[in-house]
Image (cartoon, rainbow, N blue to C red):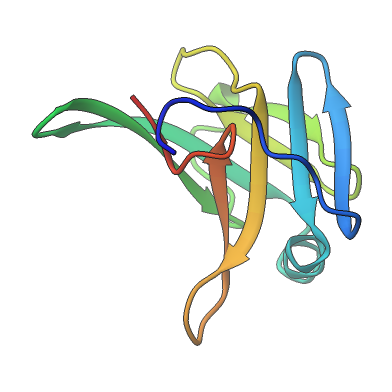
Amino acid sequence: MAGGGSPPKPASDEIFNRIGYMRVIASDEVWAYVTSHGGVLYVNAHRRKCCSGALTVLDTSTREPADQARYRTYDSGGFPVRLCTGGQDDPAALVLELRGLGRHRPTASWTGCAFKI
């Protein structure tokens, strides 16, 4: 569901918090991961060229980036989320999940989508 559709609805075991015009939805697993890996999640949006045009993708890290001034801090209801949208508007919802085979890591989606067109 790239670039459209309705925002995801939080499940009962997820942390849901409304922050201004952006919702942050984080599962309990993400909360446990982030709190055990420094306590802050950094989310960086950047544009990539693709055969069908430019896409905005989100990268996550618990490591502090060098360019801290570009990040805005939001409360996820359990840990701070530092978001850098690269000058774009904030997403309607920032959905945080723990994904990966074998080695789980936090991932972020833009209003429930893996990328923004």
